[in-house]
Amino acid sequence: MRKIFILFAVVLIGFASCTDSGQSMTITVTNPLALERVGEMVEVPMSDVVAKLKLADTAQIVVLDVDGQQVPYQVTYDEKVVFPATVEANGTAVYTIQPGTPAPFDVVACGKYYPERLDDVAWENDLGGFRAYGPALQARGERGFGYDLFTKYNTTEPILESLYAEELNPEKRAKIAELKKTDPEAASELQKAISYHIDHGYGMDCYAVGPTLGAGVAALMAGDTIIYPYCYRAQEILDNGPLRFTVKLEFNPLVVRRDSNVVETRVISLDAGSYLNKTIVSYTNLKEAMPVTTGLVLREPDGATVADAANGYITYVDPTTDRSGANGKIFVGAAFPAQVKEAKVVLFSEMEKKERGGADGHVLAISEYEPGSEYTYYWGSAWDKAAIKTPDAWNKYMAEYAQKLRTPLAVVY
Image (cartoon, one colour):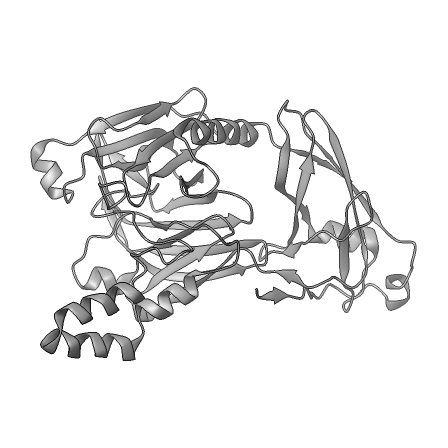
């Protein structure tokens, strides 16, 4: 597994004060819920750490638990120290930040831009992987509106880079093209051997997106009509582990009602230990309030869904691309820290079903977007071949996740 050493620079305050061995910062984390919080990320502004510890520009820090053991942490692009905290139900936990040399930490959350695969941006943590489609795919005329996902099991290490490397291996692809002329069966076997659509023991891509919202894309609505966003036009990876991956995506201008040049921006982050991505969506040049929806594509008209506006989450049990059941079931969902106006299942007409590549509809959670604001929500997935085995377990996870979003950990220092 890759490891990363945490290094950072801070404003010079004075080298002598940096070396004060007794300087430390106590972080008290309180859990107001009757639910245990395990590995939930706590954020402390780096500026507060610098001020409290009187750090010099060459200083390093460590984060310690109550037993004095080092806790993995990361300094993010927006200058926050993030680390996983575990707090008992209705309990508190104490952590310490102090000058010191951090241990190397395993890289858990990470991602990459893949221009060689039609400009995919793909990322993962210990529990699963995801991707957003890019301009090269759009240029081919493919309608990749939604998020795709990769299942993962039997490992907590990053796997996507190796999956892409095999899938795109130029020598093996050339060999497949050659074999198709003389030995189609051998060509098929080699194709299966390198494909990330086949489970080789660590996970796979067995989720169908098509021209839909996929696994949780947000979109503006004109009345009841979804304004489908196309592929991103520009990407910037802001954080790349060890504990958090963050990417900023910017989209092509749209005409929305009477507003022209409306540009959508998304900031997506995935933390170690979470099944869900945090996504912050904003629209520039939008002049009036509009409905915004988050959707999960349905591949069955009567599939197992939950649409709970009051408690702030939606879920669906996806049958995967193999309807025989060989690939198991994928649980998808979205959770919302703010009040949801409406959550419901919307089925396509026969005409729209053809337009949407045979999909049956969406589970939608609808809110209101005010110009100049940010729309924040969480979306993601689990696989029944990994830790979460049943729809009930997934729905419990999602319901509790929504509770935690609406009742965050309290951090005092």
